Length: 134
Image (cartoon, rainbow, N blue to C red; front, top):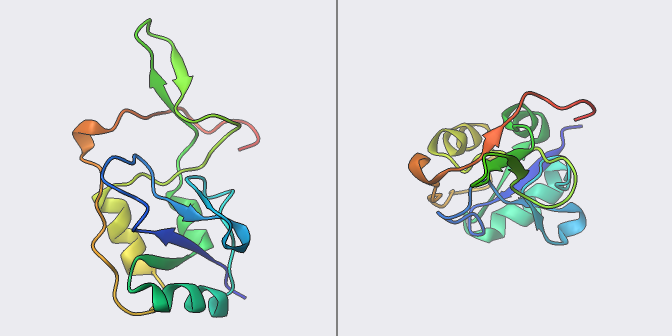
């Protein structure tokens, strides 16, 4: 049985560096594919079809292959700090290329609103090689 993650186009705005995903049981949002809810095809269709294209369902394995390591940013003193609080993350960049791939892989639930990717010049995330246990 295929599992799907729900990408929320409406909550991923131009200023967001990473794509916003629905959490389990439709309870909030996350940038981390590991923390996103895994939905059945029937659940994904019931969420995405009436959304008018603001949400798309993509196979979990597709999102996982697109996810990067925990993002960091360079502080003014030259050290790296996590871009987000908490433990390790596996985000998908809010880029034109990522949205194109997601659009190709998405479950057909109708139209898809036009995403607003972050301009590459605004991105500040630094990704290190895969961490142990990630």
